[in-house]
Length: 260
Image (cartoon, rainbow, N blue to C red):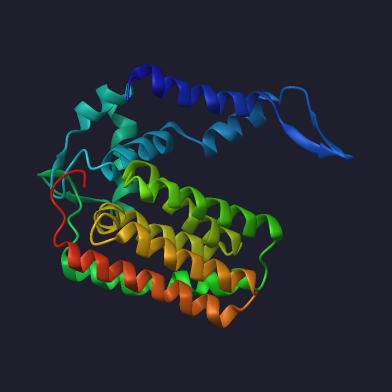
């Protein structure tokens, strides 16, 4: 990422600080610029280190750095157009999320997840995602259902083209819509913390042995249960989907260092 892109992120933060939008009456009305103290409060909650952390996380999950590869603080700071302080803080946040390993006197390394750990994470994720499906079945709206159906249709198109770059973000969006749709913050935080550690493993499983087609068949079973407002069936479909994803990962072998 260039310095210009990093600055663009900061500009977005400043835009948020500059104007407050609030609901009044039947529509949304733009208000005058916020007071300086209010703007500073927003900047404090959306700090530069958080922006840097998000960008480094994207770089790691893209496969640019392989498992166990060392991250150079100065190189990343130069690449992002920031000082080394925010990068150092970002490393702490990424360590807390399980994406990097910090070794005293050696440096920061992309986390290596063993086959055994990946299986363990999948098993926990299966229960969490099944629970998310169950909770959503009890509260799903017509708009939420329409969004899920639309995502499945788009994944069908990408899958037929064997286009992982198009399919993978849609796949993530599908699962995200279900988990966030529960409006359960604790479940979402736990789930996404696990998923971020499995991102590269999941991409590899999708391209192995008909993963595109199988995955979307499972997605349809989940949505059918949600459409029927059947919590038990939704849990079973969500749980089975993640377990099938685990099987695809195991069948695909160990992931290579770098993008899969």
